[in-house]
Image (tube, rainbow, N blue to C red; front, top):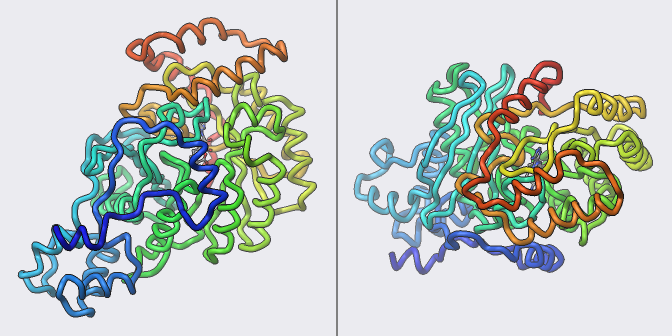
Length: 456
Ligand code: SAH
């Protein structure tokens, strides 16, 4: 224990070296829900040099570090009894100081005939997170969480409505990957034994608000064994609401991961209301940073756009988006419209198929590659914006954000047919705010037929 104290728990704070981001993060993440604790220090928090120092501090020769790393990153094992090349006298230190358990399984939920698995995990301090594992014919993708909850308070997202619990450590993010690799390899998914080939930071949390630990986890995910898991950077996606200074940091990091921008509106007037962080970083600044990301990395950027009925799905907004993207060059970006997934007590619904088609066609006619996002797992609340296990309480920030959008709509006199009913539902007690299962099922059938091409 003294050892663990000396090394200290993994850092879970916002990155102190980036004051702009820290200021933005502190401003946004005022709501702390449930518990607030720290992850125990873990081998996967460390780079290879730090691991050699760590093993020597524990009283073992430096060469043991690579052996341990191979067990973790290559064989995905934390069980000392399987490590026959190590003396059995190390077992206790391995269990408590090197690979302490970080995540305990709470529950598994299956969908898509056994090809999608949402898992809920509990960290040692009780913080809850979720992962979604999705098997496709050509790849297996893991959606990881970077935070427990989220401080960004976007009013259409279940995670944002729950508020932030805490940042995850680099080790906790790496553990999500290791556990998914064990699961995929075991043959539990319907398509048989497989390898996790893609990792997307699209689970709970805003990854760039936890930059230091996400950066460390990216190194662990991408670097080859024994340093890391050796997943190709081209298969890794970081999705952000638009933290401009950290998009620049990510670009400078030098690994060609894919960047996804959650834009959802091409104009600041609406985006100010849909994404509270837009108060800090405006649409044009974000698109400039995204364009710069392409220039520096050569990776085409994805723009994510949740289509919300009567809110952001207008033809003129598709045209404005196309104009803003084309003004920054050709071939550097593609757009992923996402039919809005239902969230508990949601005021909003997905756009109709006709409106969605018009939106997509407008972008395509303007020369922008556009692919509707496949929304896997929406019947188990595993799809985009639905990850908020046991977190039914809206944060005060999110309530204000919802109110702001409604005020805007009233001012604009935009027809919103179900507003009264939806509003009544929203203000009803948490216990009564449950998913409307019928609406949910109807939603799935209306979208599962035609638009199924997944985004990679
Ligand atoms: N905070 C990061 C990572 C979350 S990724 C980000 O915002 O990019 C989850 C993606 O799903 C984001 O693009 C998010 O805006 C989108 N999303 C959130 N709620 C949604 C909903 N109800 N339906 C569809 N997409 C949603």
